[in-house]
Image 1 (cartoon, rainbow, N blue to C red):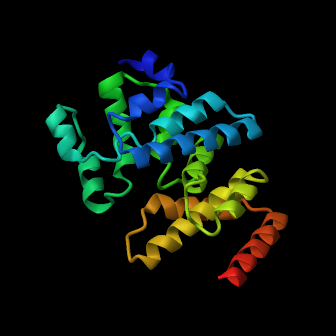
Image 2 (cartoon, helix red, strand yellow):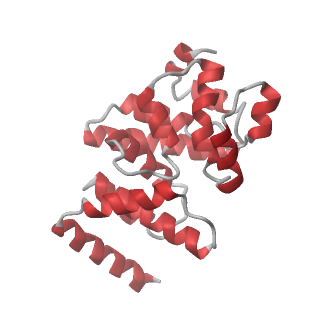
Length: 214
């Protein structure tokens, strides 16, 4: 399979393609992320095909490790080796780029960027990046109490939803005593500064409602 075959994936062929890489449960998650990204992209008039494909490919390396790359003869940079040691849960997002390049000669930079930053986020994410970042967090299979609220918010402001997702990600990691990737902290800070006064009020009401529901 080459880049052309990847670009031609659709709702029927994608599950078959993903079965070579992921468990059934993970495939279900991926399909729901892709559909959520597609819907958000259509709403914001962003390239929905790219959003959907980024969703389909975003977890392609989820079950892999540096050892997988070594076994398959895929070159792996020293920074990626270090990333796996310090941040193993986000490694798959960054590893997807050399994997897709080596195995499929996949070069679509917009899609690759969205895949790379779907777990950590970063400052100044593009609208497509934000859509995949948000979709991964709020796809319908997620059990979070605040999932529906963030989904509603995502149709009002991508930037506000990106801030909220990065903020909840930081809180989740702190509760679990896990390291927060610096890119996530930069993402939260960057998008917090982008909030208008009206959005700040909206978020304050939302956070208050969630607190009362706990």
